[in-house]
Amino acid sequence: MMTRLFGNTVTNNVKFGTSEQNGVGKFNDITDKALQELKKLGITHVWYTGVIEHAVMADYTKFGIAMDDADVVKGRAGSPYAIKDYYDVNPDLAVNVKNRLAEFKALIERTHKNGLKVIIDFVPNHVARFYQSDAKPKGVDDFGAKDDKTKKFDPNNNFYYIVDKPLVVPKYDPLGKDIKFTNEDGKFDENPAKATGNDQFTPTPGVGDWFETVKLNYGVDIQNNRKAYFDVNGKKPDTWYKSLDILIYWAKMGVDGFRCDMAEMVPVEFWGWAIPQVKKANPNVVFIAEIYNRNAYKDYIEKGKFDYLYDKVGIYDSIKKLIYSKNTDGNANDVYFAWNNVKNYHQHMLTFLENHDEMRLGWKEFCKDPWNAIPGMVYSATIFAGPTMIYFGQEVGEPGDGLEGFSGKDGKTTIFDYWGVPQHQKWVNGGKYDGGMLSPEQKKLRDTYMKILNLAKDNEAINQGNIYDLCYANTKNQSLGFSAKYGYAYIRYSAGQKLLFVYNFDRVNPMDIALKIPVEGWKAMGLEVSAKYMMKDIFMSDMSVTFTASDTTNRYNQNAGVALKLAPYSVYIFEISPAKE
Image 1 (cartoon, one colour):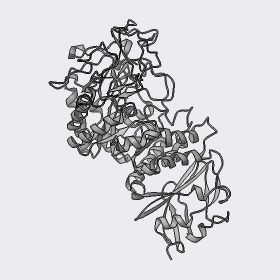
Image 2 (cartoon, one colour; image 1 turned 180 degrees about the vertical axis):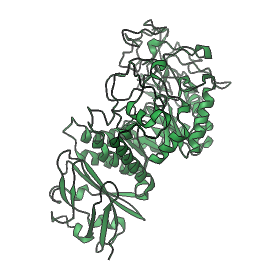
Image 3 (cartoon, helix red, strand yellow; image 1 turned 90 degrees about the horizontal axis):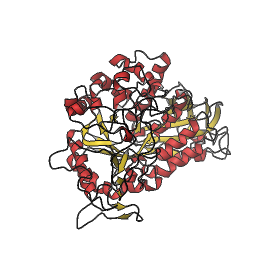
């Protein structure tokens, strides 16, 4: 969830509005009732986004918090990924700013009390240009405090420098052309300029760059063929120690996991060194890597010691093509190859169809109708033994509509602005968290998500079992009616449970098929090929079929197999059990 938006009940939604105009959610808004309802939905961990103090266009100077320069802040509420103080929390999220850390600790305790675990962001690659910790423990130096700024690179510098060149901020109206923030003047005093977070070694970053951030130096001389200096006189680079201290600080506070922003932009060697040490402080803490380079997956699991990796460029991107209303080149074969590429470490893959970086499924320019994403959501939640993730409001069809401010009309819920999230607010219902303002159709959609998430959580065939792909045995020349472009089938199985998943991703046409389950599939499940079985849909229909296993195994007879009629845009989850005599 975006913490500042989750509990906000104000519905004004003024473009570039202040927190007074548009409201802002607080730690205290996330009540026992809210958490209990999330647990019922099937949630086990809550990722609280935007907790750590980041740059904002708001005045908290009376609380001893320095004001950020508007010329290097994105949006009035600021980017949660431009961290200003790694040892503090965002004052926007506190009812009593002086007690902000205590309010967050209370949220941790409340979350745990309700049987859930806490995940927060760790942003290791970059910090806000105006990084200044006023809450750091005694003896801790700020990033950059002891840097030698005469060197563009030094292993023990925390930042990279463009020597003898001052920063020139991009031409940018932080609050649009008609609104000026107090200290907006088109300048920011930074001399020498520091490299920008997205590896831009220039004193003149553009608006499209992460210009509000500066790149952290983990001992890699990026401009010199990425030469690494991970051991300098028997010590690691200074940034390694500072980052480790930050992780241990939050882990000891009771945080159960870290979603590590742009983890692949930080050397895998750092993670392999740091993660085991954090787990000594809190053995149950989990690490999730935001990573988009499939070629690096293996290293970040084996060398980096990550528990889970984002599978954005695999499952998400291939499913997106199938459910995107304006796209006609989606293909179930792409989904198969995405799975096949990572099947050997599937238990480490974290899947999703929404997060703060992606379009809302309910946006009219994406799926048009959030129901159209349900087959993809089932696939995402059940194809791996690893976790799946949903974004707050996804379960009620939040469309991410509106012109919020820094965020344009892009089908994403803003992370930069103070805003209300209209369809989600109907579930919040003034803080009752009972869905009292949802339409019957939205309630039905939420119930469907509840079923998907709890199926994935509670069924051992999904969360612990193996997978047997059936697509190879159901190609066009083998199975009558099975579409290689829109059809998909696989078995998830464990010793105590066998589940068959069958999909039709065709938006218009039903699919009448004779589904093959080859001999090897029955053997994998440990079931007799000569026996009779019943399979019953445990998801959204009352379909039930009784058949003899041997009738499904002949791949040279197109008519052989389990006869199924699949509706357009549909998914069926059949539990296979011995047929009653």
